[in-house]
Length: 322
Image 1 (cartoon, rainbow, N blue to C red):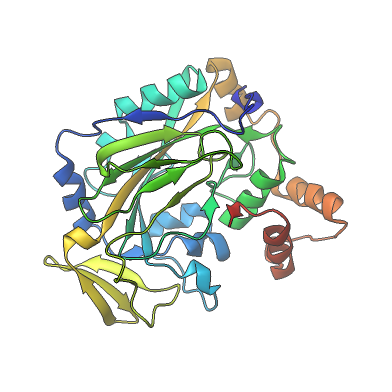
Image 2 (cartoon, rainbow, N blue to C red):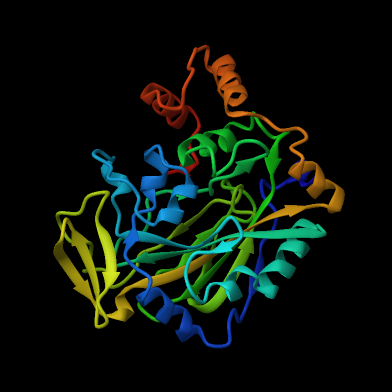
């Protein structure tokens, strides 16, 4: 199965795509009409699963670390292989992404699962790189929150059940900077900066390949004061608005809002590997995952609702590197 991939440099080498769609303005038009958008960190720190995104109304989070309250928002356009918004099917089943995933993982079966957009208003570059949230046979975005899956991936305690995921990130941004930096030879090696932010993409092994977003917009512009983890971004037909509890904190014209589209697909070496995963061979349950963590930590956690568990896992196994 593709869970047994050899990564001598820490991750597989990404594939670049020079033209993603014929009419990139349609992607930005779709983004304008499908708000409001929510801060993606809520999926990491709340008890929500990504499946809750289908409701498009993430629950209110009372407390969040300040470093997670950034001017970046997410919108889910497809989940679990199904469209959530109009005009997302062509991205979900994008032939170029699918072929790049096959080339990257040397696999026969590619199953598109997710399409989501990230929108960023003017901000400094991220102070840390990160890897994406993985999935495992038996423990996935339907039954576990992001922080738990992140720890499962970073701990390397569950490689026997890991599902390989291909990620395409495409950009539709004409504004200043917003470059994408990634480490294709491992986090300790040299990084690459992708600067062409209009209708291009990089298809990568992002559950293992560290990456980050550099500064967006002019250096003297930044996020407004008063934002919380519950702040939203929406377009009113004329401009983009950052809204906190019904109050507009700041408005921007289109050029100041960086738009990226992420596509995720599960990949399998062949049909038999896919069938084995569907039949949950080598599956791990949430309770079994808890036990592996307990054995490693010397603890006795019994529930994902235990706040001490989240603190212990994120402190020991983070997907972020300063």
